[in-house]
Length: 105
Image (cartoon, rainbow, N blue to C red):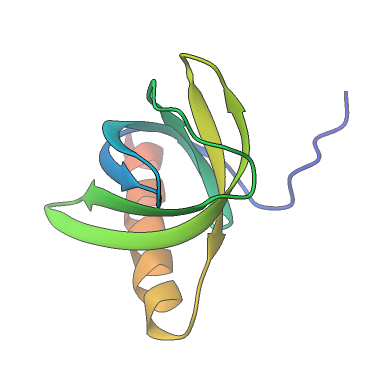
């Protein structure tokens, strides 16, 4: 099976607090890349919804915005990130720190 994603993925266990216009919740980001993530959480979200994610990465709180790509009932949902300027730079820096830590393990 051919990989469809263009960005490298990183298996993680990052605490996340998320919010959409309709609902909010907490969970874990288990799969992360520079373009999106998968959130393990039982929240009820819909494809195309705008979501805000607050991630705890290396003792720092990062807020990222994205759109819900798909959801799996009672399991979680995938988000494609929406970035602009400085936010993307800060996020990419955090991704590099996580990748370096994973490579040391």
